[in-house]
Amino acid sequence: MNRIRLASTEDIPTETGLRVDTDTLRIALFRVDDEIFAIGDRCSHEEASLSEGDLFDDEVECPKHGSAFDVRTGAVLSLPATDPVPSYNVVVEDDDVYLLLEDQ
Image 1 (cartoon, rainbow, N blue to C red):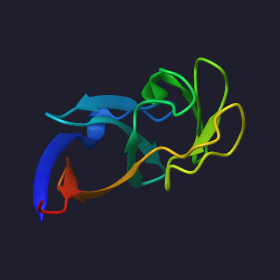
Image 2: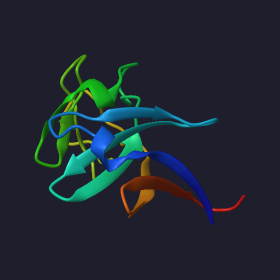
Image 3: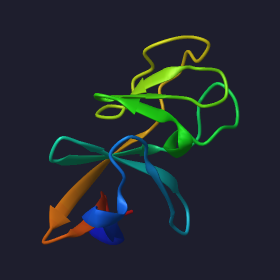
Image 4: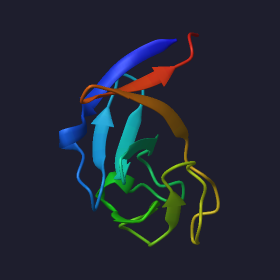
C-alpha cells in the first residue's frame, strides 16, 4: 500500500472542499462531521472543479451546472452528470490526511 500525504485536517474547510494535486491525480477533499473523504476533483459532466462546489451534508454540488455527487462514494446524485467520479481511500493520522493507493 502506497501512502501520499495530502493535507492537514485544518486545511480542509467545512462548507466546500480542498483541491490537492498529486503527480497523477487531482483530488477534492471534503470534511463531513469528523470524517474526511476524497473524490476526483473533475466533474464527470464537464470540466469543473468539485472542490469549488458547495457542500451540503455529504453532497457536493458542481459549481458549473449543478450536478451533485456523494463525497463518500463519488456516486452521481443529480443531472446533468450521469457518471460517478472516482472515490479514494484516505486515512487520518494525528492531523495529517493520507491517500492510500494500491501498489501497482
